[in-house]
Image (cartoon, rainbow, N blue to C red; front, side):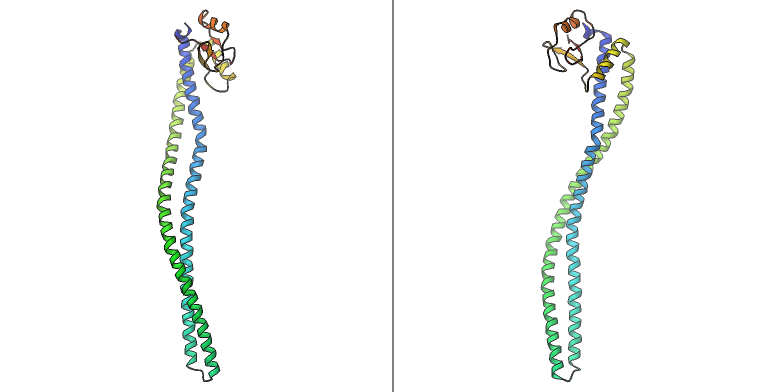
Length: 238
């Protein structure tokens, strides 16, 4: 039986290592995309914190501006009242009185606006705090995943290098004619498996029925045989 042949067992071992290497290489190839997606998510989360914090800072800046404007109006009122003490004409006094009243009205408007801003600051501060706490936790988790991907990348590279050495060794243990057929099969197929057992007279690689000639070649002649549907090397497990 071909499956019991020592040379064929060496070929199966080579095939197993090739498949493992191909799988690891595909995973390594897909890692940059996963890393980029995580980096993007981390950037978005950090931007969310910045947005919440920026709103709070904007309100705080507006509050300081209002404080300055209210103080300035208060100083103007004091100056106008001092002028009242110096004027002698009633018309001038009344004009200053009207100006003081207008300034007081502006001061009241600014104070009302400041109260609204202070209320918004309290809300924004609470929102920013909650957002920062929750988002920071998400960022920590995402950054942990990112580190794990870096570790996985290094692990994959090491495993691929080790497998490469094992594959080189396996190739020396397979007889040349059998190895040549195997290499040609690998070039024909786009992806593994390159060797597949026959099950219920079907190639388990392509799931199509093989001919009687293929069955005879495998079972009777016990030759290295390829599926007449997909070209994979086929054998019977017994």
